[in-house]
Amino acid sequence: MIEFKILKKSKKSRARLGILKTPHGEIETPSLVPVATQAVVKTLTSDEVKETKSQILICNTFHLHLKPGEKIVKSAGKLHKFMNWNRPLMTDSGGFQVFSLGFGHDLNVGKILKYFPENENKIIEKDNQPKKVKITDDGVFFKSPVDGRELYIGPKESMKIQESLGADIIFAFDECTSPLSTYEYIKHSLKRTHTWAIQCLKVQKSLPAGRQAKSKVQSLFGIVQGSHFKDLREESAKLINSLDFPGFGIGGDLGENKKTMGKILDWTVPLLDEKKPKHLLGIGYLEDMENIIKRGIDTFDCTVPTHYGRRGIAFTDKGKLDIRKSHFLNDKNPLDQNCECPTCQNYKRNYICHLTRAREITGMKLITIHNLYYFNTFVEKIREKIKNGKL
RNA sequence: GUGCCCAUAGCUUAGUGGUAAAGCUCCGCUCUGUGGCAGCGGAAACGAGAGUUCGAUCCUCUCUGGGCACC
Image (cartoon, rainbow, N blue to C red; front, side, top):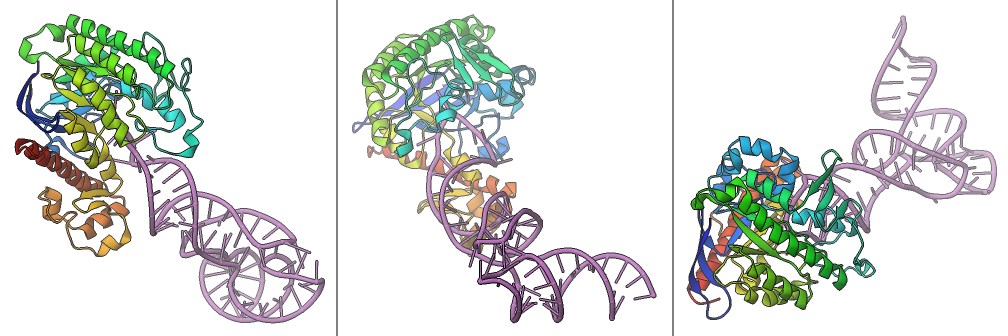
């Protein structure tokens, strides 16, 4: 079971400084949670991840269910042993794949709606279904991206898989919704997500892992949905808060821009138990961090540092650097002048540029290490700011 | 030396008697509970000369370069 201690509350905002204790150690919050979908931070070994100041990782239930299957992971001694990561772990429930493989794929939109004119006519009405995913009130039928076979995940299945995987913090199975859904769609979807949340709690308590020594028990976080509709977000926050979750996730779409993201958090966070940790799912550009932390977010996972790293984008004090650009072949500086990460201590832009252009995986690795270190240092500085009363 | 074949974008190849298309490369841009993908946009070519023709990248000849075979 987790334990969450709030060390300091900001007087300027809802930001707080905390310690989140888990069966595999504690983390300082606010904290970034790097993404290790398939039980690996892509291109890195777990030892390398430790050199990036990463405190906790999040793996994915859906992907690990497909490959290699939770039975394999369980028999390998569960996720921590399997991937040689003895620090805290989370697993996402598979709820995001309802969206990413469903409407997200069909309509080519993300959690935050961009202002493309072609999105204007795209609307998801109440009884619409995605092409490759069938969403029912009991659970979701997926078509496996691996071999095409049909697979079903509902709250019970997600809990069982997550139990086998053995992360410290697990999430309730939810339907992550699209920003293009109508109010009626979201209202109906929300009912499902809430029913599933209740079922997840019940199932989790009945599973063997839910009955073992308290110190080892997984902590199940409930997820608030409701899209960009104020009353639905409020309704969801109140309901999820009323259930016996030790922490919360805030999921779903966050409106059409960064401002709506802040608004949605302002509607939601105050309705959730202040003493419990709050995780924002899937958000975390550098410019988002202060914004969400000020609004009471303790942890947040984001693919940006790793995903961008593999595409050759390095984050620096002077902005994003597309290291594949040919002029970097003549640049003898480190990725970032002030960075103390293993990459910046030992390698220069010219070499990393060459590696990425030659499609050598070490290029991706070096940037991934840097980006993670840079993001974690960025959050570290935000923690400092809270400590010093500046945020 | 003789015979045959070939010559289209930086690379690899389509194609047509009315000036040309694609993949890769290159140059921009997009990417938030991760395909290392993907998508959008851009730059860029008919080896040289002559002939036939209203018009030749396409047909004919010569040259240049490359390949193969034979002596």
